[in-house]
Length: 280
Image (cartoon, rainbow, N blue to C red; front, top):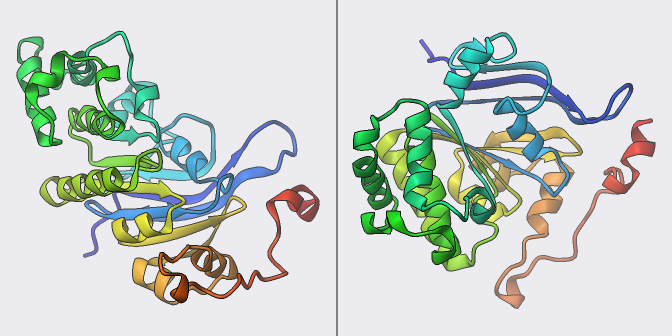
C-alpha cells in the first residue's frame, strides 16, 4: 500500500481583496511525502509564497489542504496550534525574524517552551545541542543576532525550527540573501538534516540551480497556477511548458562560449503586466 502523503494540496485558491478579485493562486494541487523535497519555482509574483502562507494557516483559502490526514480547514484553533508545532518555516531574511533585544539562545528555546517540548530546566542544554547540530558552538547561545553573519543567522533560524522536531519545514527563499559560498553550506546542512531526521521540505525559490539541487520533485508556478509538475530530472531535462523552457534558457552560463542562444519566448505566454486584461 502506498503511504498517505504528509501534505496534500488540492485545488488551492487564494484571493487578495474582496468580491470578484482575481486569484493570486488558482487551483493549485500538489503533494509532499515524508522526507521528500518539493521545489516550488517561478518568478516574483507567481504565487509561491502565497501557497506557503496558506499551508501554514496564515491566510484564508479555498480548496483543501490536508496535513497528516487532517483537513486544515476543519480543525479547531487548539488543534491548529498543535499542528503548527510540526510545521515550521525558514524565511529569506533571518535577521528580520530574530529579535535584536534577545539572545539567540532565548529565541531558540522559546518555541520549545511554548509547546512544552522541554522543561525550562533542560532548555539551555537542548539549545546547545541544536546550535552544534547546525554547525555553531553552544557557547554562542549568549550572543545577540547582530553579532553573527548572515549565514550564521540562517543556521540559528534552522536551529530554532528544529527545536520542535518538525516533520515539514517550509523554506521560503532561504538562501537568496546569502553569497554563493554560504548558500552552498546552508543547502548542505538542510540536506544532511533531511537524511538524518527525515524532514520534508516545501522549498520555494526562483534560483533554478538551487531548486534542482535540492528537490526530488518540482512544481513550476506561473501567474498563480502550476504549469508543470514532475521529478527534477523530468522538469529540467525535458521541460514541456514554454514558460519552464524560458526559465531554464534564462539561466546564465559562467562560460560565455557555452551560453544559450537568445530566449525563445513563446508569444502566446501571458505577460504578468497584462494579467488583468487577459483574465477579464
